Length: 67
Image (cartoon, rainbow, N blue to C red; front, side, top):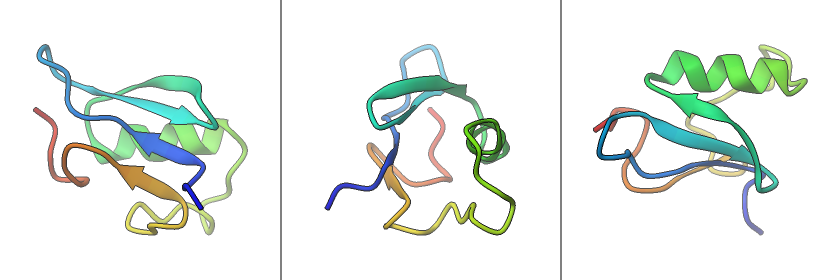
């Protein structure tokens, strides 16, 4: 099963697109941005685990890779 959240590879100009079920949430420039997008999408602090592979698929590098 594919995780509902995808953090796409870093763009040439910096930042990474973040999508939830193929709907764009925004462009993140750091892990805190991803957390903020997920809060705005309705997840609670307790539900947001950036290292949870069942929640987030990191493409093109993990949470330490920002271009």
